[in-house]
Image (cartoon, rainbow, N blue to C red):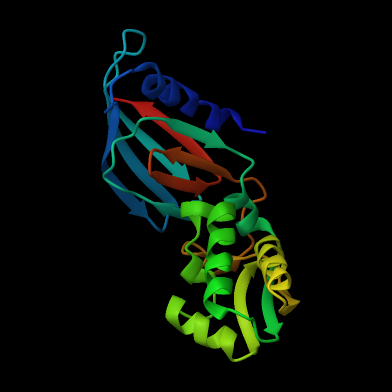
Length: 214
């Protein structure tokens, strides 16, 4: 369930969504405040008759991950149910394999395709697998070893791909999810409730958001 603070972003989503222009908004600035554990975004959008606002600041509280681009914002989404969120709050695991695939290159491509369908632009494939793309093919051809690490859900998905290619997977638990807290100077559990804000090709995963019109 989206909180009342998160609900404020629906106004921004309406501002961006009501326009029929190809270019309805753009991110013009960001600020990371580590001690406050806050990531601020400045969005410039075409004003509407209802709001009259053309620039917004979005305070992202307790952010976990983000990626900001210069691409125009043509739509905005606020999601509290998405694989990218599960990847953070799910139990962490490591995926091992044994067996030589008939076609290591095809298996590598299939693993990447499954990952991209599940997590898309929100988690890089290279951040989870144990090798670079070229190294991964050689690693798979070797017949055994650690393949990847990440959420149990993501590792289960990759394990299914291994099985489909005749390679035996083994998922081992790694531990509960955690994140580094700049404010506390230690590893802590991620917030119990997270939301994904998508602004075109840019996105932020955080605990709470607040949008303020200028």
